[in-house]
Image 1 (tube, rainbow, N blue to C red):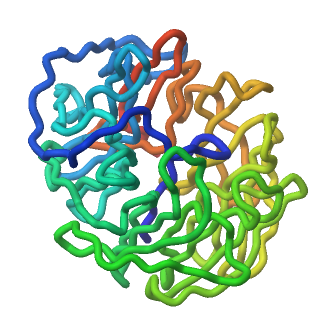
Image 2: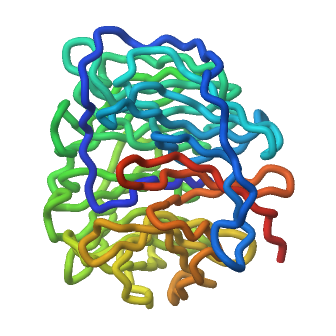
Length: 397
């Protein structure tokens, strides 16, 4: 079973970047002059999470574990809050952390990470060439990064890379520079050396206005997106394909306030979807299950909070959903987790039990190396935000 987790913590996002660059990025990492800062104090009373690395005035995305250790990617901001330096933070043992800077024009973002075998991909977005668009880099050690080039990236965003027995598939959509997410569904085959094949634009009469995520569901790819686009109140449309080339409409996930699916996971013969309902704050965490490969969906029982479930994973013998809890206005946020045995009935976990309980911090993916489990993300603050990595001893059943 292959799982690719979504990393979006809000109902919508905008593929915009702050400044114009005139050249493509280079691939040589250099040691950052800024030394790491760390603390071993717990993040909340009664929890064992400790902050092991901090990126002052910056941000970090998800953390990934592999034979090369632990890797997270992010940016250090300038005085205007724009990305001035792209960095990766790496550790071979979860104790000693090193910050590396990746060369290239500063406004080309260093995005969320995906792992395919022992290869890493960074999915970013920025200005370059005549139009700008997706910025993809790849690495086999998390330290040295090589740009992946394709004219098909221009005015498009690559949002997911999914490994499967049928091959590796990248998914994205049309995203002109300085616009909100717009429309469409685009897929690319990804070769073993990290390069992308010819882009294929998927058009279905009843397909979603904007595809958002995808996964491998045992025997086929699934992709989904809100039928009426990110500002609509319609259902989420689910598409299926055995090979990533020919796609068909499979079903729809519905909620009275509009269904927004963050992730779908195959558990045995059951598909479990997690997400939210509503397009404006306050929103409600939601989950659904399907026993007919996604043709029909039943709502699950979920505590009604102003929160969104954005990712789900099968850990040990239970399902863990992770997402973001919001204030009524949506201005303040924190990490939230839920537990379920089969996806039909969910219980919210106490703050700090599954993820660090830190105001302004949200994360969706944990990574385990040896006897330590770590999580990376951004702590939103005023006047500046910081990237942070937290670790704790791996829980055992």
